Length: 126
Image (cartoon, rainbow, N blue to C red; front, side, top):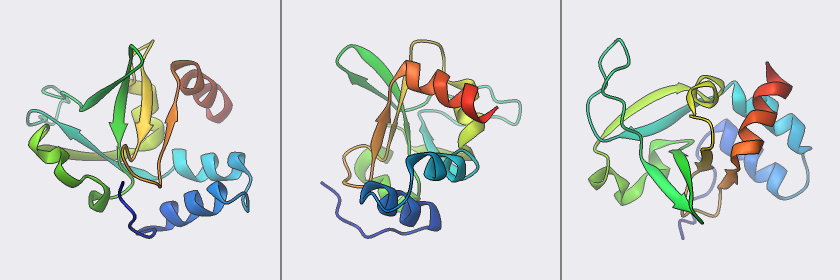
């Protein structure tokens, strides 16, 4: 498991929230407004076509992989060699129904959102 210390302000907030020193809602408010990195298997054109995000199967549910910093990507560029950056809220709006999100997979500074959690966050922060 990746043990890098927080690399960005949002990672510092995540670490603080994981320690119970920041309310989760306060972290999520900052997180949905932050820029994240997504890996994609093909080049994405300006109109958005070609987006083929890195996915993880978590007990039969597909999750879109999101990274808070390129330092968290690690070896996964072999699976999806291209990256794009966008606001987390925009990512959540594009997640297909029935999909979840996994943030910084394989690291100690990560978490998962179930499909219902994605919908809840969209509702709460719209």
